[in-house]
Length: 228
Image (cartoon, rainbow, N blue to C red):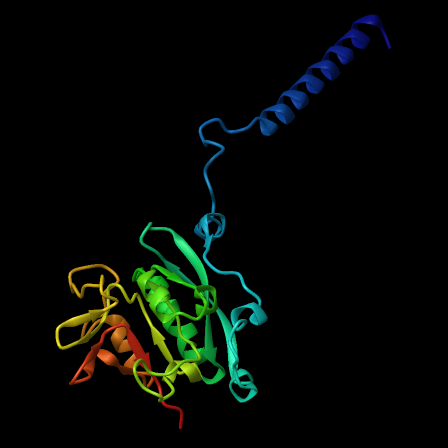
């Protein structure tokens, strides 16, 4: 090979090498037009922003009360998600009769998808089994081993067959007096249950009764279901 051909060949190889390197580096260069904080999935948004209101074991959720084994064997601790009044997605827990778990899971999916606001969902054991303290905190709960107030009759809550939702917004009303005393029933407020609303409809089509339909008293927070 003469010198001219040798140098021509070397120049060609060097040129090809530079082109290849430039091509590789241009492919690895980040796209500055897309900020690095852009997230690709709304599901990731939900996960990263999720606020945990309750994360108890089953034992902790029923601790502190003398509950018969005949009741305990029918209980389940269920995790639910909902949007609260801060506009963020929250996760809580509710103790239910095992035969009502499917209903509540389905209804809370509707609650979440429709963004019906729920203040919090925490087992009432965290309020020392005080219905008064739980309702004053606008806490949604189901199981509470107790009598109906002022009687010796076991409440449907004692069998985990009833749920109270946003009690400060959906009070128990008798003769013009609300319980909790600081509660107010205002149908224009978010989180309030009204006749014909989506939440009431979802419960009723699954065979639940609403306390807002009662005659002598109104219990707007309350849904219960009798098992067959």
